[in-house]
Length: 331
Image 1 (cartoon, rainbow, N blue to C red):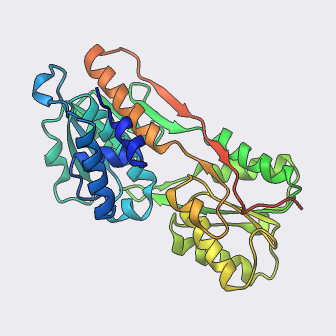
Image 2 (image 1 turned 45 degrees about the vertical axis):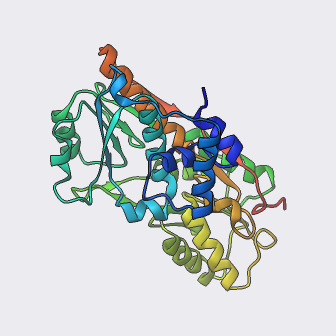
């Protein structure tokens, strides 16, 4: 039987792209030629889409995204998480109700779901409201202290150590950090643990960092502004690590505007390994965050919770890996 992976291989696109085209996802940004190529390939391989009505395991899964649709398109980290969820659901005949916090009365759309996946950062009040809807629930990309709630997060400690070990192995002893700040619905600052891990590593390894630590937002514009603030000091570190690829891309643009070459004059590292990071000039060294897998695993676990009703919640951390490209150099 022909699978989505078979079509993806024949059409030279990703399985996620095939899935979204076959499901008529209007938010997918691909050329008409690519869309038609996938449809023609599926037809030539005699692909048969599974019928949801033939499965006894069908249920309704609600997805809550804390990002707006526009933000999701600008930073595809959360888009990849959602794609992972929806691909698993399609393969297992699960009906999806997708909502964004930016939607009007988004909670009303979730009233009759059997299970819930919450993607992003949420306040205690919001978490309590979600748990009132269903006990079959998992939070992705946010640790929740409640031991009865399942979560999947990234292993930031391992990720930051991998990135900083790499920079120090190249001889860098003065390293900057460009971070982002996020606020919950109740106005509480959600602290980025990567900043804490960065400072602890620098102190332990006697690195020069205090003058080069800045925080803004997780956007290209903020990365541009933060790097300009560093440049205005007339004193640069030899390397900078950003807590997201958009921040790093903005920083790269600021450096280029001032005539400062990467990596000849300064090394730069991102975080997430978004699709754009491989196509910057130079291509961005970054830490790969398995966002798609996080979504797929999350849907799988909540499926498991619905079917087996386990008494123990799961607290899972996914490892990240360094992706070495051309934006860092040895001193």
